[in-house]
Amino acid sequence: MALVDFDSIESDSERISFIESIGNLISNGQVTPEALNEGLANYFSINRFLITIYEQVVQELEESKIQYDMWYSELFIQEKDKLNDGRPQSKFASQAEINSAVIVTNQNEYKEKKYEILQKERRVSFYRRLLDSWKVQSNILINLSQNMRSELIALSVENRANKDITKENLIRHNKEGLGDNIRMKKIKRVESE
Image 1 (spheres, one colour):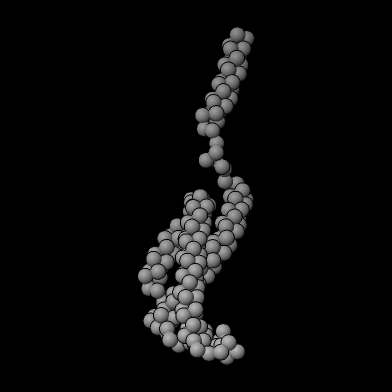
Image 2 (cartoon, helix red, strand yellow; image 1 turned 30 degrees about the vertical axis):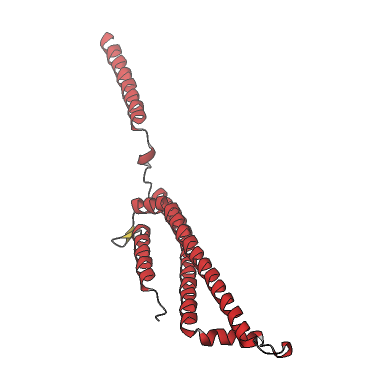
């Protein structure tokens, strides 16, 4: 029996590739404002996606542990009854002896169930670490955003995305119109003199 569940790895690697495609901010060696905004906008969705997957793999692990405990308990009782049949109470088999008998008489099934639990524990651990690293990603996004904002301010780049162009044009038009009125009055004054 293999220690690795290749089906889950394939689906897990597809999920990782999906997250990387959305979370990768670097394009041509640079982080653009658009990519940063997209990363900030997608952060919550990816985090929720990871939490959902994490909870699913935790639930799968817990279900496997419950099934294992039920299976093992049933076998334990059967082995105990076999080992203690015909023995006086003072010579009953110890718990360690019964545990060993269960494992020895059911080796293949025992290994399969233990491997299944081990694989699921690894998946839980993997998604836990992935969630932790995604939390670090939020700090990176915030720092990049603050750095980019500082750089844009230092370069005196206007915030054109938030400007109201029509209001700006009206102000400019009124100023120009006012200037034209003053010039016209000066011309009329000069002509009348």
